Amino acid sequence: MNKFSAVVLGSGLAGLSVALRLADAGQKVALVSKRELSECNSFYAQGGIAAVVNQNDSFESHIQDTLIAGAGLCNSETVKFIVENAPAAIEWLMKAGVNFTREKNDIHLTREGGHSARRVLHVADATGAAIIRALVERVSTHSLITICEHHIAVDLITQSNDSSGSKECVGLYVFDIKTNQVKTFNASNVVLATGGAGKAYLYTTNPDVATGDGIAMAFRAGCSVANMEFIQFHPTCLYHEKAKSFLISEAVRGEGGILTLPDGRRFMEDHDQRLELAPRDIVARAIDFEMKKYGVDHVCLDISHKSKDFILEHFPNIYAKCLSLGLDISREPIPVVPAAHYTCGGVVTDLAGKTSIEGLYAVGECACTGLHGANRLASNSLLECLVIGEALVANILAEKRDISPELIRWDESQVSDADEEIVISHNWDELRRLMWDYVGIVRSNKRLDRALRRVCLLRDEINEYYANFKISPDLIELRNLVLVAELIIKSAKMRKESRGLHFSLDYPECGNEISDTLLR
Image (cartoon, rainbow, N blue to C red; front, side):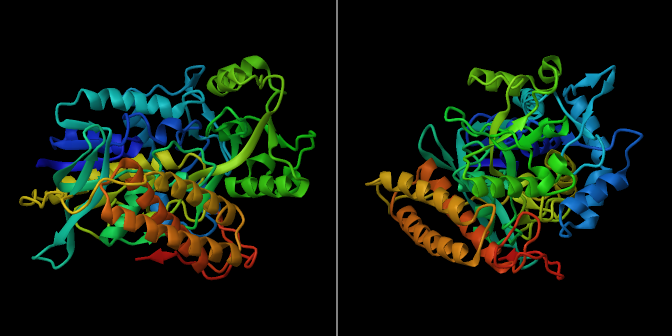
């Protein structure tokens, strides 16, 4: 039995920052990662982290930009709390060893879609990688942090709290990928920092680990989820047969990149007066519209009118990646397509990351605090991880929950080895394709009905497989992913309007009633 003050699932910015803060406060922490610590969504965040650090900017401006992008569905209290705590979060990162890009001794601030000012701090065009490397270095040497790489959580362990009558989380089962054994973790607190569910879609900017594990586990345990219909599609993912899920940063448009059809005609002026700097949902739908209208398989993002020195200074990694594929972005445009990028909904929490189950917290992309509303403003996600993460740690330290008694160990005596593992890969492919075809950028009642019928059949087949055979990492992820896909579809069917990232051909107008979509 492994006993900890806290078990943190996920090694992105949310998970790493929470683990470090807890350990620095004297807590014994287990940090669980499905692969190496650095393999997470945060690592691939190119653009940066939004914060008001310039005297010409203001909290009110950042708040308004967030509310506007969120299409009326943001929680204003949450937005205010996170924006006003941003400078302290940046200071914590800098003390942790993150060296943001500077220009003439001042921190260089870039501007991204939906922002009315330059307020995005970055490390060239690989901000996430720089942040994760700095924090992984600290985590790896901390005496109170037990690192569990190549481990994947299976399910939470809950029980009734006799004193309050509510449900509490007392631990979880974790599959050790290298030994094929399930371990029992006993914990005073469990923190879900597992990221989003981009792998529910055929095309995504997310790494393979983004399978919605935390959302699925929390929902099975009895937590509410909210606003799962709002899947952000990043407008510009590199379109190339040899490139897998390579994101072309929002900052390329922020620094003057223009979108064109393959024949060179600029088209954003036909869709929004903000042109390329419109929020992501508008830009993604515009690209989708133009691709379908003209029957093209991609559009182009052109930054070649800038000098090569400028491009190398601001986008060295994008330049190098494209050049490795035979594309010189200083001379020619970049072929791009939209791809699933960010899950705006998730497990319902308060501003301290608390769920409805005692001892269970959620932070980052897997949580729904109300910050993003119907559409996340660019570069607010890393900020949310830090601010809510700090509040979460303060709450854990204040509550001082005890470790529960011995837990029931995992029992697989009634199951056998899988007989046809090919079923898993086929179901995986079918799920991702139907989500892309029927629950993508533009939706309709007919498409959603078709998707739900197919997903429910897949869910039943996968659950039967799970009940009768020994588990594997692929089966664990597929079980989670099919549940999250079902939640996305059911949430989309409940929303009888078009708002933010959710656009329906049957309800093209934004409704007057503003409400979250809740599933329990």
